[in-house]
Image (cartoon, rainbow, N blue to C red; front, side):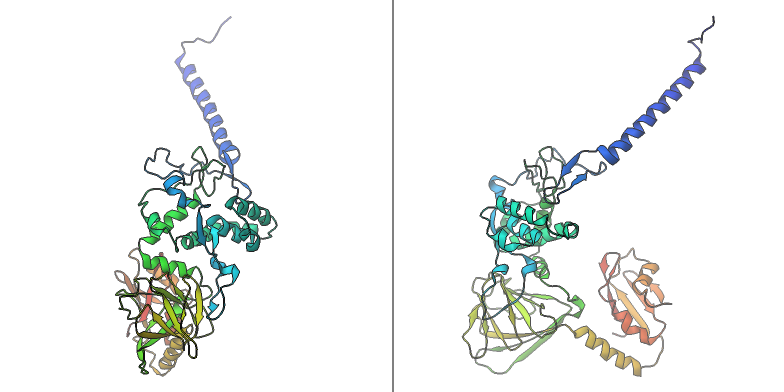
Amino acid sequence: MSSQPWGDKRWSRETKRRRLAQARAVMDQIDEKYKTKEEEQYLDPDKGFAELRDPTAPRPIADDKDAIKSFKGDFAFLAPDAKCRVAVPSAFGPVALDDDVPPDSKPYPSLEHAFQAVRSGDGVSVRACATARDAKRVGAKAFKKRSDQDAFREKAVDVMDALVRDRFVRADRDALCATGTRRLRHGNDFGDGYWGLKGDGSGRNELGKALERCRDLCQNEKNFWLAWCSDRVSNIDERDSAFDACWRREGDQKLQMLPAVEEALSLVLGRREDSPLPLDHASISRFHACAVNACPGTEEYALVDLGSSHGTFVHRKGRSPKRLEPFVFYRLSKRDEVQFGASSKRFRLVADCERRRRKAERLAGRMAAAPDDEQQRTIVVRSLAYEADEADVKKLFRHIPDVVVTLGRGSATVVLPSKNDVTRALACDLEEVKGRKVRVRRAED
C-alpha cells in the first residue's frame, strides 16, 4: 500500500494555500457579522431605541489625562441637573412693554428641565417637577406619546446647543471658559451613551461636545450674543434685514441720523469701538443690550438687556421710563426712545425687512433705462474661496444660463447674458460657495 510522501514540498504548499484561504474566508464572515449585527449595542435613554456602534468610529481616548471625565465636584456646574436658569428659545416672543413676562417664557431651574420641556412638548408638567430626575421621567413618558419622535431626534443636538448657550447667558460663563481646551466628557454610571459616556468609555458624548462648542463661542463675546439672539429669530433672511437709527440729547428736540446698518438680524450694543450706536458713557457696559429684528411685517423690533450693570430704560410718550428686566425681549416701536445706563442720549431704532427688495426694485428701474452692453452686464464675486473653480461659480448662478466666468485669486468676474439678469444675480449675495459666504456686486459699484 502506498501513501502520500510527507516530504513532498508541492503538496505542502498547496495545503497551506488552501487552509490559508479557508481561514481568510472565515475571518471575513466574522468581520461582516460583527459589523452589521452583533457589534456592541447601547441604549440611548433620550432616543428610546438601540443604536449599533459604528466599528470604524474612533473610541474615546481612555488615557486622556487632562480631560474632565465627569461633571462632579468643581465641575458640577456642567452637569445637566445643576441648578441654573435656562429659557427655551422656542418659547420666545417679544413681550409688550407694559405686559408681564408670560410663564412659558420664564427660565427653567436646570438644563435637564429645559430639554425635557422641549422634548415632551409639555412645559407645564416639566416645570412642576422638583428635581431634574423627575423632569426626565415626566419628559420620557410624554415623549412616547408624540407622533413626531423621529423629527425631534434629528434636531435634538441643535436643541441642546441652543439650550446650552442660554444656560451660560446668566451665569458660569467665566467658569466654562476657565476649562481652557480640556475635553469635556460627561461620564456617567446610568448607561447614557448618547449625551454622555458609559462606564467603559463608549458613547457619543453629545452633551460634552455641545459644551465645548459653547466654550469656543464664548472666546468672542460678541459672536456669543449674536448666536444667542439668532436662536430666537426665524423666518427672516439676514440679507433682507436692516436697521435705521437716530438719537438726540435729553432736552434737545433735534434728531441726528446715524448710518443705516444693513444685512444684520441683531445689533450688539455697548461701549465698544465696533458698536453700531455711539455709546461712550462710563455707565454703559461693553455688551449692554441687543436689538433684534424679530417682528417681520412691522417696523417694530425687540430689545433685550444683557444683564448690564446700570440698566436699559425705555421712554414712551406719556409714561414714566421703564427699566427692562434682564434677558427678556421687549417689543418696541420706532417712537420709543432708549436710554443706556445714565447716558443723556436717547436713541430711536427702526427695523426693516424689505430693504433688499426695495433696492432691487430701484436697480431694476435704472437697468431698464441703461444700455444693454457688457459693462452693465458684468458683476463681481468677492470673498471667494481659493479652491473654488469655474464650475462652483456657475453653480452659484445656476438659475442664469450661459454666464461667462473669469476666475481671479479670491474673486471672479461674471458676464451675464442679459442686463435683465443683473438683479437675479445680485440676489445670490451672501450665498455659500465651498462653505464660505461670498459677496456679489455690480462691477460699477
